[in-house]
Image (cartoon, rainbow, N blue to C red; front, side, top):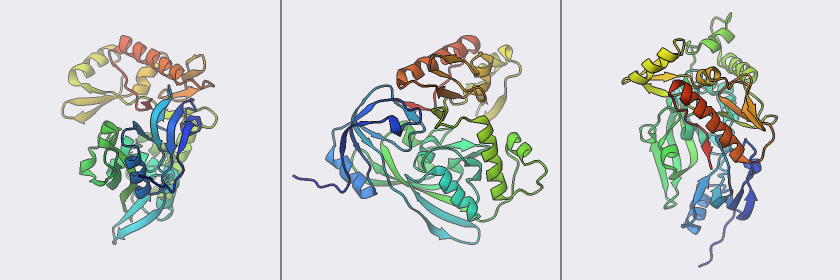
Amino acid sequence: MSIFFVMIIKYNVQLQPHNSFRTKALARIFCEPQSAEELSEIINAFPDERKLILGAGFNLFFTKDFDGLVIKPAIKGVHILSENDRFVEIEAGAAEDWDRFVKYCVDNGYAGVENLSLIPGSVGASPVQNIGAYGTEAMDVIAKVKTVELRTGNNKAFSNEECGFGYRNSIFKRTGLYAITSVVFRLEKSFHYKEKYIDLSRELEGIPSPTLAQVRNAIISIRNRKLPDYTLLPNAGSFFGNPVLTESEKDQLQLKLPDAPIYNVGEGQFKTSAAFLIDKAGYKGKRHGMVGVYQRHSLIIVNYGTENGREITDFMHKIQQEVQQRFGIMLEPEVRIY
């Protein structure tokens, strides 16, 4: 049976331009479907191939060639589905640039995503990672996630509850069984600033009732000061997740580090700061060869010039071992490693 595709299917494609760490690897098969229908077609055309869904490439990097099918959805478009006096529901294609979408919302007076300004990546990655910053997470504003199932090519929509959101986690990240085609956000049409994060409140000091635009601009200023430009120093943003501890683990940590920041997250669990632990382990600004920890933010591993992803994972392991030996905590990467 012959199958005809509108999209171009490529072979042995270099993935270096498609991951923000800029590590080299080849995809045996590569395509960029422009619609959910094309996505279903390509999945059904290669039923036995291992598959990887690739967004803007800010939450992953490669240590070796990918022996299978890399699908980079190119589904775009932003449109209003419904609205009333209080809320608006907006659907955005998976390939839309995340920060461009945030700007669109802020410019139109739609509140809910402004604290997630300047996070690099695509709209489709926002539910996968349940991206978060400054007291806000994507799960707070996502109403529905539309997907194509990788096993069958069938369309499947997930409500917020069905997404299984957790800290930097979701059913999409845990299972790897779905390709996101679009995300529906439910945003508010009025805005009143609520203090959630001390750094942001300091940045807004002297502004009694900040507007959406002022909040967005403040966050952009903070992020630009703290975080490296990935075009100059390739990186994947926050490399490690903040550890979640049992009460016993929390007590042990406080014996070793009495000043460790501890946040009660309920159900007998406590969160601490991965950046703080990396600082205390002596890794802030530290460099091994072509890989190092950014001088201004300990959660950021930066690439000073290697094209080999294994050098990044070797450095990651050094940090993990040092933190575990000193404090008894294993840091887990947020970044996906292939």
